[in-house]
Structures are given as C-alpha cells and as structure tokens.
Image 1 (cartoon, rainbow, N blue to C red):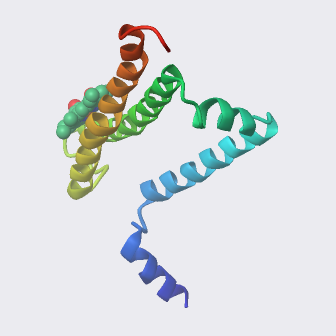
Image 2: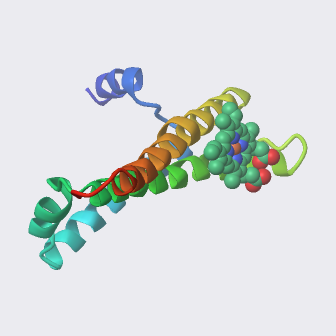
Image 3: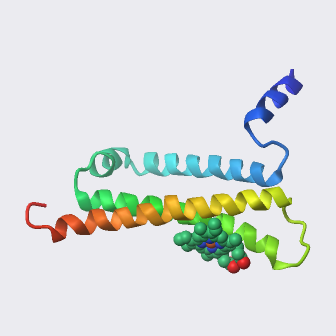
Length: 135
Ligand code: HEM
C-alpha cells in the first residue's frame, strides 16, 4: 500500500531529496505562521478590504512590489545554492542536473517574477500620478 502511494507520488513530486523535504517543511511552517499571525492579530478583514480588493493604484503597485520582493527571496535562495556549489572546486553539494535546474529557475524567477513585477509595480504607482488629476 505504502509502496503504491510512494510510486504514485514520485510521478508528481521529487522524493528522497533532503533539500526538497526541507523546502516542503519550510513552506508548511511559513504558511502556518502567516495564518496564525493573521488570525491572532485579527487582520483578515483588513487584508481583504484594504489590500486584496483595493482599487487604489498606489496600493496595487505596492502589492506588485511586495510579490517582487518575495520572488527576490525565492530566486536568492537559488543563488545561495549555486554559490554554495561553486564555493569549492569539485564540491559534491548538488548533482550536475540539479545545478542546471537551479540555474534555470533562478534566471526565470529573477527576470519574469522579480524584475518584471517590480517594474510594473513602479509603473502602477508613478504613471497615474504623472498623467494628471483624478487619482
Ligand atoms: C534581476 C535579475 C537577477 C538578480 C537580482 C540576480 C541575483 C543574483 C545574486 C545575488 C547571486 C549571488 C551571487 C554570489 O553570491 O556570488 C546570483 C548568482 C547567480 N546568478 Fe543571478 N540574478 C539575476 C538574474 C540571473 C539570470 C537571468 C541568470 C542566468 C540565466 C543568472 C545566473 C546566475 C548564476 C549562474 C549565479 C551563480 C554565480 C555565482 O554565484 O558565482 N542570474 N544572482
């Protein structure tokens, strides 16, 4: 039974790699921490009314920039992994294929999910302010 579940899961998830398990656990813990903070400080209503449903261009710009910073962190973790691998010659920190994957995710995340939302965020904040009254 357990073997069936494992072989089914290994089609969709990378299993057996401690780095992946570490990432999974930190995603779970971070999610729980966010849910706890929002509930404990009673900020769900504020989050929904003031941010998620806002039509204020400056707040929307800040949301773009916030997600750009999250992705900077995500791409930065990739950068740290690459730096660790390259710190010492012939270091066996990652498999060569894994290094190539991290290289690709770092590049894609930094350009598409960090640099572009960051620019869109700045545009969203600045352009309406510069294009006349009515904001
Ligand atoms: C705005 C976009 C990007 C930012 C802010 C960024 C940032 C960084 C940072 C901070 C490091 C760590 C450097 C170090 O500790 O030595 C790094 C490493 C690296 N980045 Fe990027 N990166 C960006 C885009 C890219 C792209 C598009 C690629 C390639 C497709 C790329 C490939 C690499 C590689 C190969 C390393 C490891 C090099 C090394 O550590 O010696 N990066 N990046």
